[in-house]
Length: 429
Ligand SMILES: [Zn+2]
Image (cartoon, rainbow, N blue to C red; front, top):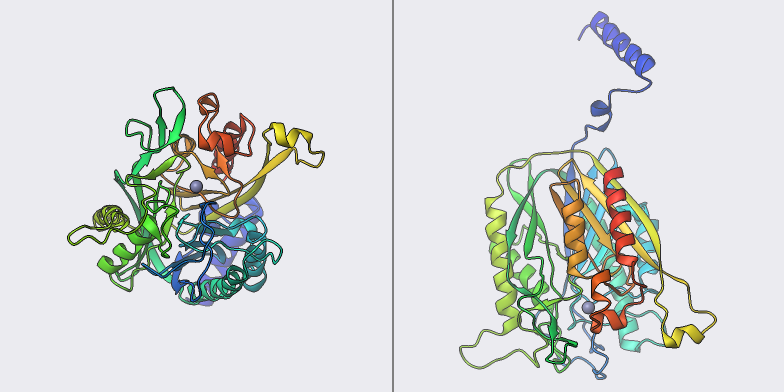
């Protein structure tokens, strides 16, 4: 380009900026989307107390399948979002802020750029950093977990390269509504095949610019509780086993972070079994269900052809304070908080793909309402993410009762507040 042409281009740009106050929007936002993946083995090397069932008091007695942490970082125009999927139960209220702060400090990320989630496996270590309440082995595990988490994020950032992405949807019967009605009309934890479930398997395929797949994020609504309190073996349960399957089939170069959708009232079809059944010829149910889900992920993944580089990333984070449930016990306590916080994190990549994440165990009806109201064609609903505030129950179930209703910390009406707030945040992106 000669000097004269360069000068006239400069003049046009200057006039545009003066007339319109800024460069045209598509020029400002047009960035190359990059992504980087990493994985880490987070299987405990010492016996630990296992998450999720209060009746289980002793240490783990071995490992059935290894636990994994998977991370992906997306970047466009210098703006990053980080997703971490970990094969554990949940991030307790005192542990999450420590991990979040460590990631923010080390990598310069904001709250709205971090999606730190778990798959809610009930055959994984309890995380704790509290010497008063935590088991020493679990505290030791949690500290090493934090080191691995930080290295994992650094690895994903280092691996970033230009990518194309595309999304696809499938369906799986692995999850079943667990609110079973007894003859007397009460609701118990069981299997309710006629109850509502979100069967959608949502997959985001990521390939490098030569078309070689490098990763797949996927989202499905089920608890990872095919194993019950008698099981003492470490396992990722259904969701963890599904991710191991997809990586085995798609190849070691493809990392597949898995996210638990709105699954507060959804258990695997076979639930809370005493152990892995090792009878000759029997496929243990956690493996069977993990494979069934994993195969659907692979089916969807292989059908995704239409991929491009959408560029722009936008994200947001808010803490929504919802009214706390008033119970006979907490009514008497003067220092009972009036509200319970819900951490809501939202993001979009381009105009087709959105993520909404919650620090609650959201019942499936709520996630389906958010998906239906979302302005985006593909909305990943991620739960057990960025903290743990317990069950969030739709208003109509309060009168039915049952486990989720009796244990929720939220007052009736909170779910509606979360849905409205989330949709507002999605529209504002
Ligand atoms: Zn749960």
